[in-house]
Amino acid sequence: MKSLLCLTVNGRQREDAVAENMLLIDYLREQLGLTGTKQGCDGGECGACTVLVDDKPRLACCTLAHGVAGCRIETIEGCASTDGLSRLQRAFHEHLGTQCGFCTPGMIMAAEGLLRANPHPDQAEIRAALGGNLCRCTGYVKIIESVEAAASMPEAA
Amino acid sequence: MNALPDFRLFRPASAGEAVRLNTAHASSRFIAGGTDLLPNIRRGLFNPAVLIDLGGIPEMATITESADGLRIGAGVTLAKLAVDPRVVARLPALAQAALAVAGPTHRQSATLGGNLCLDTRCRYYNQSEFWRDSIHHCLKLDGDTCRVAVKSKRCYAAFSGDVAPALIVLGAEVEVLGEKGARRLAIADLYADDGMAWLTLKPDELLVAVHVPFDDAWTSAYEKMRIRGSIDFPLAGVSVALRRDGANIGGLRIACTGVASRPFAVDGLDVIAGKLFDAAAQTIVAECVDLANRSMKTTLVDALFRRNVTPVLARRLAQRLWNGA
Ligand SMILES: Cc1cc2nc3c(=O)[nH]c(=O)nc-3n(C[C@H](O)[C@H](O)[C@H](O)COP(=O)(O)OP(=O)(O)OC[C@H]3O[C@@H](n4cnc5c(N)ncnc54)[C@H](O)[C@@H]3O)c2cc1C
Ligand code: SF4
Image (cartoon, rainbow over all chains, first blue to last red):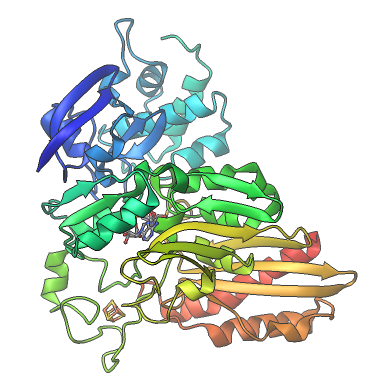
């Protein structure tokens, strides 16, 4: 059964008829076509589906769409602006934080959540914040270096 | 993972309304953070017709302080609990246990109530429907044989929530609301030693809040053994609270999780009160913890390892608290 869902996605207010049993990840990917958010393990184990809900990283595969009614949702598609890539996107690009790219949207959203709460994290804090995001390519070192680099860039892209 | 089945979703604004909705619908379940429930539903472990979302109930999402302690709403997230300054300063075991649950992103949605009411876990149960079908299921769900103890009439699935043992050593009580009103019970009494019926909550009851007393004479801590340091369920988890009385032990409480179908307080520790925390006391700690251990082959990691590691965790934690107290 569908009911009305009001929320903000990447800065845009929306009112959509959404099935009550729809997961946030399916709402974003299937209903809105925002396929940047990745479906990895699909069971809360890998972090690939991480999006921001009111500035906090959340797993879209373990969250009902109606569970975030009234909230501000941000996905990887909302990171870049007309001025260009966000500092995290640039840093991942410049510091080779991405290889196959599948975990990258989740990594960047988890890191974005970290930098909003703690603009100057040390390496231990970065490691802790990304502790739920799995990557099978990079060995994590380049990812951590990318987040460190982003944290040292000026806020505006 | 299966797609989610069709269900209705209700979002009550009060605990009373949540209880009423739950009573009105036979096949209903509460959903808090959903980090345990939604994957379980998608593995075909439950098939509710109605979910009652507890996320819109303000009275369940706050921490309030009184002279003797904290009342922590069941809907408070573990991320919030782990950094609350009162919890960090005066109830360290609780902050450490909350911080040890799953990964950082889970803790942003995961709630205290969901953690305390977590389903018990087993290598033969937390599997996809296809997988369970291939072994003809087990006693806990859809089958008639326990795969862990084949002749057993009961299920040994392990309670694997991190927070309960911390609340046990801190002397917490839970506040539950049912059709007939509210009641309070000691946290340990929320649980029964049965992998299929591990909660003593009645079908109509909702866990509303947890009351944790302050007692600054005690120090406390929580530690767990897990496969990956950043994300896994406890293979064994131990919480210790210690009160020092001059050169002697004033009191020692230990509780465990992950090694039985319920979290439990370790008995027999009274004998070391009034004594030094020396090698003899350490041996008693290790023996009492070992005696209470009920690890079974419910995890991929050997049960004997879990059994052996539990007293070590307890001894180390007690030593650390003793040194620091
Ligand atoms: C990859 C992964 C790793 C994990 N690791 C850990 C770990 O290390 N330690 C750990 O403890 N847990 C772990 N978990 C499990 C889970 O994330 C946590 O236990 C979490 O705290 C559950 O809370 P929740 O709010 O998400 O519960 P939900 O999933 O919403 O609910 C869990 C159960 O509790 C019931 N419930 C919820 N609230 C109430 C209430 N107020 N009254 C009555 N019943 C209620 C629900 O009906 C459901 O049966 C892990 C999960 C995943 C996916
Ligand atoms: S302990 Fe036995 S009955 Fe319980 S879940 Fe495991 S195999 Fe099934």
